[in-house]
Length: 116
Image 1: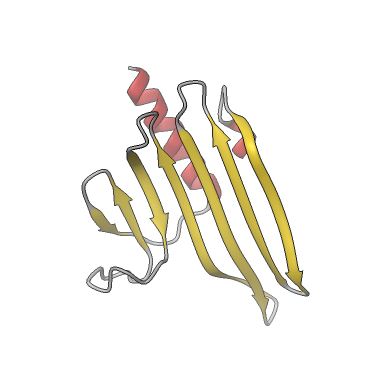
Image 2: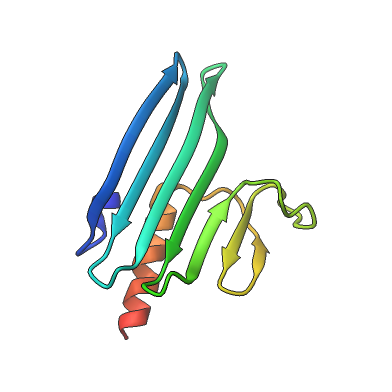
């Protein structure tokens, strides 16, 4: 999934086990054009189910402008899917929590579109 993003390299890959059933994942991928994809998840198992305490999937272009970011920070209570939402370069949208696979696919599509 993440490794399927062509021409990218890992600047950071960190899995951290904090306690039994709780952990963090942090990934930073860089592209040749200096665009960046950052993935951050804090997860816990509750009653055998994986639950996200927090997540952030952030893709920015080479000029450090946000292209898309999904997160569940509770700073947009006006969004109907609060706390889950999606940032684009100029808007905040209602969104469910995407999987890493969905984010990677979206980044691939955005990069393909930008290349024309």
